[in-house]
Image (cartoon, rainbow, N blue to C red; front, side, top):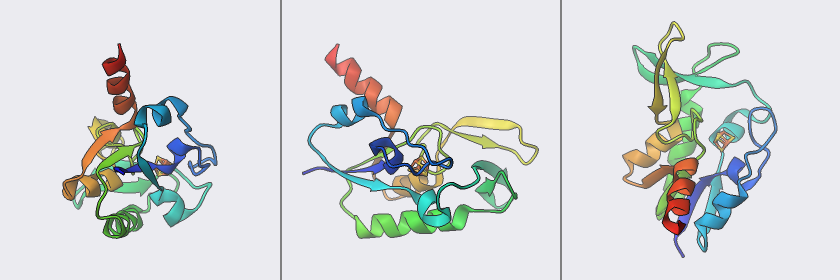
Length: 152
Ligand code: SF4
């Protein structure tokens, strides 16, 4: 069965920064008969609840910085992503939660160091690792729109 890696919050896991979830029943129905493999790099690295973070363009590249402390939180997220894809080398599709600095595929916001918006189409750190490995990736909302478009 096709293996689909998916942001755990979309399945109803209460792993968002504030302890809520993003359960999306329409999305789950649209995914159909696949094996879902959930992931949540931020819960694994920082626990829940936790401060939010944003992608920021720095001289070292695009990094995820804590909105509470300014600390660079990128490395634990990237390490989680690498370990996840190493353990699951046969993922056929990555479905990421839109706008997340970890999971968004082409919907995350990226700022400069003055906190001015540079882009709202950036890839989150986990999505970036999936892209690097040649895995097909898509934002959850885009996936759902495409599936709903196919039906009409
Ligand atoms: S890191 Fe990803 S899976 Fe975890 S709560 Fe945020 S969007 Fe959901």
